[in-house]
Image (tube, rainbow, N blue to C red; front, side, top):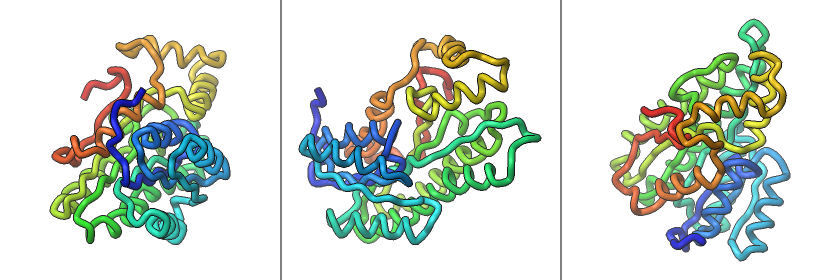
Length: 262
């Protein structure tokens, strides 16, 4: 049971909303009364929007490649046309590949940096264009535990997520006079499709682990001794989007069961 209805008559835009953390965020914001604009680069996002509409939420789905400026502009224009404004913009679209440095291709580097860093910037830029004239708004970016500490076989992913933190801090300073807060969050090991891939790909490179074995080994090093859920992330993100977080900006907050304490 969600006790609050903090987002009635507010519009929340979420990229990467077709699965995992993004879909979990959409469900929580729907429970709290938000109008939802859900975006992803796959048709599955339409299923998430339809599910939420069936539950009584106001939700639309927009297919969008966040690395395309024109598609990002269309995403926000569609949101404004449908709901009048974007009050909260959550940049959650992200990808990862895992490979030894000698095998990591230029194409992999470019794709990860384009989606995870350029995509975040383009969406933040467009959000700011809509929010600055209104003198209000919340911009929230998905970083990663790898924005705290880079891990083996993923230099491109670590670089992309460190970049998200830099974008967040820079825009927080620039947009604060316009009443806009800009924050980020660093999810740890979360029960999602991405982490299923991580477990298998890292497991093969780190010693022929069977599926699930490496994940369990890592979970044993988490103080709370469990994998996170999208719902765990949603509690933090809805707080950052709420009026209670009006004096918080430029911050990057871990949500990882204590894996990183900084």
